[in-house]
Image (cartoon, rainbow, N blue to C red):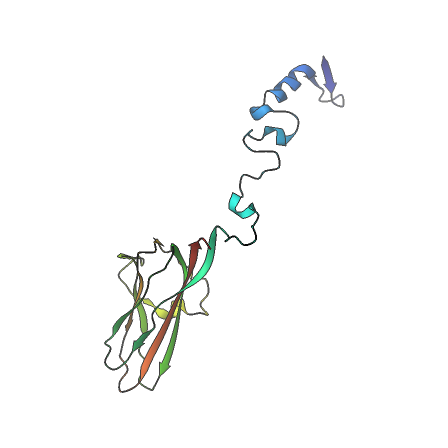
Length: 190
């Protein structure tokens, strides 16, 4: 059957049977509805872009599965008159961990505790995570710093993570510079 569509100026003839056959032959079963064109492995109500772990219901009393953002603490570093000018803050995570944001807190005590603090390397196992041999100012990782996220290599529970610090001038007498290090990152499990 042929159907004429138009207003007299640009009339178009359509073969109705051929038009329907073309829709029915579309990929994934075709049909008039977009849902019918979805691959058969997905039910019409599924969204293949959402990982299943985000839509799984939680079970009371069972540990939650999936990635969590958690803090990882390091040993405290103290620069003093007898410590030298290079020290390392270290830690060993007890479950797989991938660092995302480093936070460095610096506390100075005394009038000679004025040296510049730099991060000379961040190592996961034996791999340095800095892209050059140049040091980075520790202020770049201050708690108030903006948009200073990192994406460190993943770390298994058997590897150490170290942040190596240097100070430009060591404090004298009883003056000290204390550094607390925290690394926020993703862990797996409960």
